[in-house]
Amino acid sequence: MKVLVTGGSGFLGAALVEALRGRGDEVVATGRDERRLRKRLPAGVTCVAWDPLEGPPPAAALSGVDAVVNLAGEPVEKGRWTKAKKARIRESRVAGTRNLVAGMLAADPKPRALVSASAIGYYGDRKQQILYEESTPAGDFLAEVCAAWEAEAWNARAGGIRTAVARIGIVLGRGGGAYPRLAKPFRFFFGGTIGQGYGWMSWIHVDDVIGILLHLLDKDLSGAFNLTAPNPVSNAEFSKTLASVLRRPCYAMVPAVALRLMLGEFATVVTSSTRVKPLRTEASGYAFKHPHLRAALQSLEA
Ligand SMILES: NC(=O)c1ccc[n+]([C@@H]2O[C@H](COP(=O)([O-])OP(=O)(O)OC[C@H]3O[C@@H](n4cnc5c(N)ncnc54)[C@H](OP(=O)(O)O)[C@@H]3O)[C@@H](O)[C@H]2O)c1
Image 1: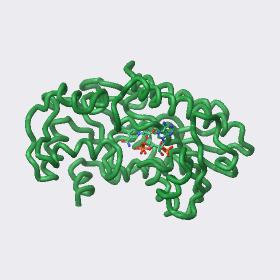
Image 2: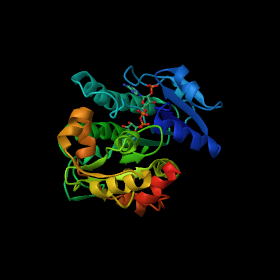
Image 3: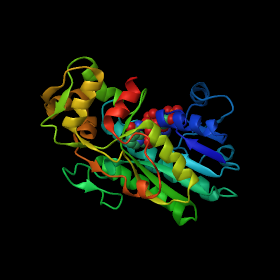
Image 4: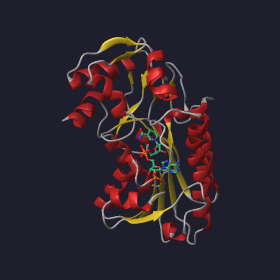
């Protein structure tokens, strides 16, 4: 299969490219900076410069491609959420996906499938409610971005391309995503639960993110899929387990307001209570490699 990965220089993009190459697929990767792509990715990957805001991808990116995985987007976990940053978070995803889908629909032949990233930010802060793929979206900034991002992806389905949306949870992996920032206070001996620790954290090991993206590419699956482990945990359990795996203390009650001071508006990502179950992902036959938190964390810290 020939696969185009947008955001190929990113944390998940580079891991997916490696997995695709490892099983013998042909890969085209896009990023805004071709040199950065070449530096990050193994030889044999076709690297094409494309800024998702500038218009559809160049023909070289889509030529002969069977399927596309859309992972490009301004990082949410880095930097303060200023007005300009929030505009980049939104537009790189919403206008970026619109341009990608326009390019896919205009290609001849069209790619057969699109797997497009979204995030569990779609569900927002929902306290104890258990959230499935059919649950309604919230109304905060990230939820609105996710809903608009997904709406652009669904236009590919309307144009006859099989489309799966991957609502990704809190990814536990080395070298990217939220985990290094979550683990940092514990490594420096001042980690603790957030507030009472009642909030739910829907985590997933990076190997399962890549495993599910490949599963969505390979199987005839459409619609939204939650990319979260089947066993979400409370923040108290997450913090105690992380502290124990890192052999560090776990203090009670880091006030949410202190986190806001440290992380800015990004703190909403870690202070929101989002209890997600991967109902459609499991029903589609995907078997999780890391269903339990302790073993998932141990595999990262081994
Ligand atoms: N990792 C997680 O924990 C997580 C959780 C939920 C959802 N997701 C979603 O999954 C996708 C991939 O995540 P990731 O962790 O791999 O992200 P990442 O490491 O930040 O990579 C993002 C990719 O997008 C490109 N990019 C960055 N800023 C951009 C901008 N302003 N306009 C266009 N392209 C831009 C980057 O390439 P260039 O800078 O070279 O163009 C890079 O290849 C993202 O959309 C993210 O929101 C990730």
